[in-house]
Amino acid sequence: DRPDVRVSLAEYYELIERLDAGFGLVLEALQRTGQAKNTLVLAFSDQGAPYPNGGYSQYEPGVHVPLIVLSPVARRHGVVSDALVTLADITPTVSP
Image 1 (cartoon, rainbow, N blue to C red):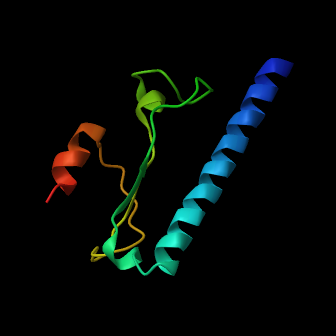
Image 2 (image 1 turned 90 degrees about the vertical axis):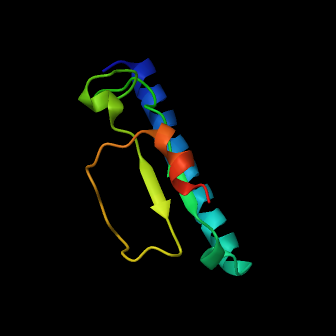
């Protein structure tokens, strides 16, 4: 609990908030242009900053990274999975 860590963590939370707002703008633009039903949206990240319970580690907290998939052809929506995923699998999985 140091002042520099507090500032850094606040900046990190602000970054997440801006990312969320930007993601919302992209989804709104897809809706507005009629492309939402034609677009596969993927959102993923790396391990992020080295804060408690995450970042730069091959231990369990460090390998938990977000992966959000919004598919117009998905049969089920709102599915949450604890399955192991590697980003190296994304390109071959979604390629035509």
